[in-house]
Length: 48
Image (cartoon, rainbow, N blue to C red; front, side, top):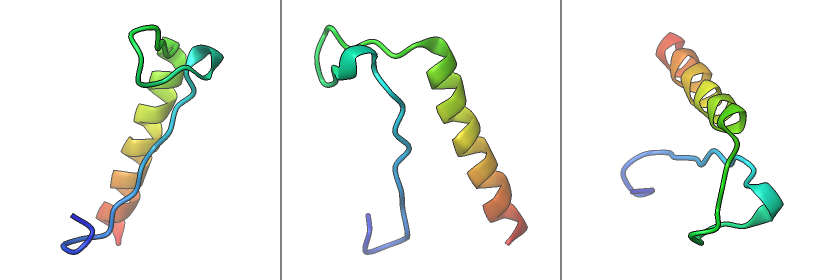
């Protein structure tokens, strides 16, 4: 994908730092914050 367009990742914290595991849990407010980062990024790119 990087050959076609620029890209990035948005990281949100998981409780106790656990990821890629059935025990992984991210608080709803952290998911919301990550979604807002994505929204603001798309809105800024739309203005460019």
